[in-house]
Image 1: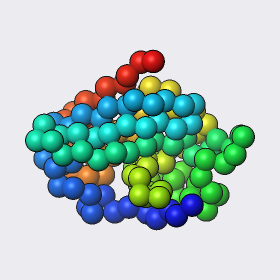
Image 2: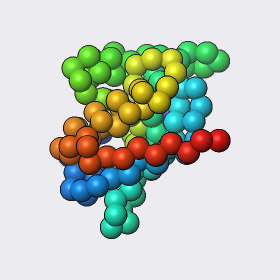
Image 3: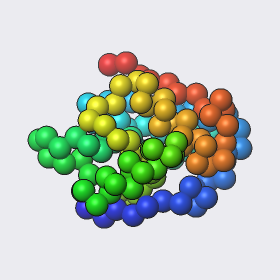
Length: 125
């Protein structure tokens, strides 16, 4: 698995320039798939991972857990690229709705946006 840290300033500028919708479509206990979308049509696919889940297999290699916990303890979220997908790495073993909201708010801060400019839409299944 190819993993690298993502600098939030390398992400598209529109993520910090207006209303953004984060649509969450696929929810698994430790992984959430979704998309950040702007009114002008810009889109970035993303996932949120609960990085401490280890059964039936580890969600993320151990070397990434410490930086994820460090970022979270400082009010941030670790952004990584996993095989070409933007991933928000969140400490924990599950992703309740509240944690998804916290992760998106921290992502907004990371890209220089106000969290109030981000709308999170969770598709119930």
